[in-house]
Amino acid sequence: MSFNNLDTLYRQVIMDHYKNPRNRGAIEGDHMTVDMNNPTCGDRIQLQLQVEDNLVKDAKFDGEGCSISMSSASMMTQAIKGKPVEKALKMSELFSELMQGNDVDTDELDLGDIEALQGVSKFPARIKCATLAWKAMEKGVDEEKQD
Image 1 (cartoon, helix red, strand yellow):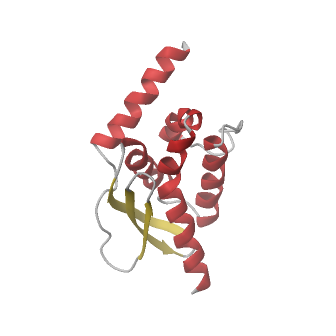
Image 2 (cartoon, rainbow, N blue to C red; image 1 turned 45 degrees about the vertical axis):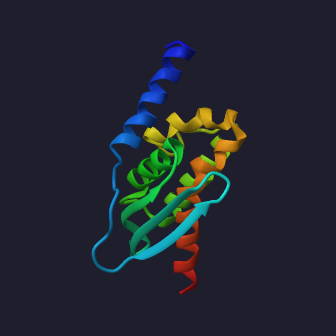
Image 3 (cartoon, one colour; image 1 turned 90 degrees about the horizontal axis):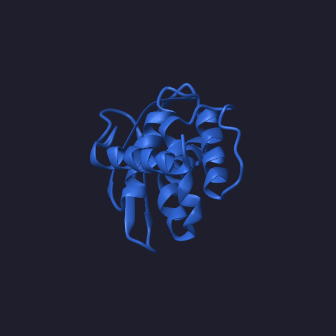
């Protein structure tokens, strides 16, 4: 597949997650909530995680922002649900590397739709948009460990 076709496909995936977000809403019952924002561009997210027995049982988000930040939140919640916390954190680490433009072995962990965001690395001002939900997840997991 040519670069232009791949770029177009990635844009379609991002817009699909933006227009039809997965896991948008609130978790019923016991969960943690993390609020974060990106003051540079006005993105804000409220991430809710339900972690039991070191497993991400559920993940939902709400917020507002650009297509990159909201798509990334949709993709992230899809990717981490049902995963052990350590694997979710490893995915976040790989995603951060991807956003910095580093070569990432995506076979190590299946990032799924998240790979569509790799082009964001070419736009440094947008990297914070893409990583906002991931940073919220890391913060939530860190706070959970401290409790």
